[in-house]
Image 1 (cartoon, rainbow, N blue to C red):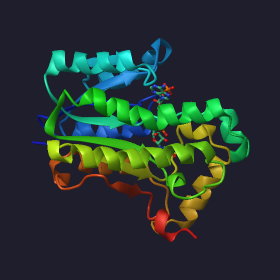
Image 2 (image 1 turned 180 degrees about the horizontal axis):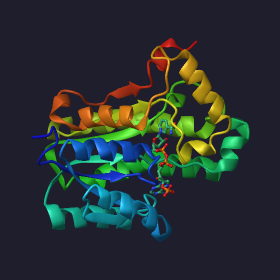
Image 3 (image 1 turned 90 degrees about the horizontal axis):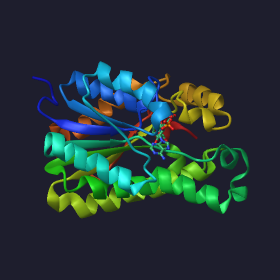
Image 4 (image 1 turned 135 degrees about the vertical axis):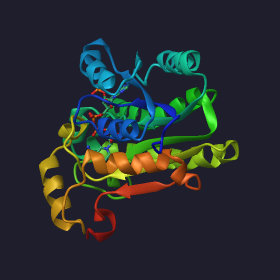
Length: 255
Ligand code: NAP
């Protein structure tokens, strides 16, 4: 019996086998969870479907988080096929590349809106759509980064979006505690992924993290996957509204 045997849930945010969501999916499956996946559009389905099927997923659905109808459709399909579910993983973020290249004060109004909508508001709308389908005792985990609480060079509008995301985690956790639903975030150290490639000087972030983190190494998708597994499992039944750092200790040790 695995830690997640008998539990079912959905993962938003696998783009390829470098995605943090993919590391999470592998840990959850290994622990016995049954998984559903989403992909952004048809072009990306080609990459996501084979990965999802390799973890025995049968439910693989389109979902652009900016499209409320698609989100509603995802959860009604889950209910149709599975009944109630146990967990949701939100591993989604986006900001226009130009807005990450320019100084923060040059962020466009539209760029600010898009980054906040896709990277933060989507957790709120996803939770709303998931609620009728989530079991009491259900768990939601999102992914964040230290740039929410520090002015990390070049992280700019994404830092503001992550601050909104982390605050949303606390408000959702406060609201849903009574229903027995937990909401937490994992704040990961830098990992080379598609989304990370949009951040200027990302290589420098990797170098600094490796040098200054007490563990003296970069964290991996597996490290993040294991922490997420804990938060989604019954090992964490008393944990909600938490920002759980998985960055080798960088957040407290860096000057
Ligand atoms: P990733 O593999 O590029 O994943 C980002 C995902 O967001 C992709 O699957 C992307 O889909 C999806 N996405 C973007 N816009 C979307 C939309 N409108 N609707 C639905 N999905 C959308 O990069 P990642 O690094 O694993 O990112 C996952 C999460 O971890 C993000 O929240 C990120 O901020 C967070 N995080 C990353 C790091 C890091 O260093 N990598 C550190 C801390 C936290 P497509 O690629 O198909 O467009």
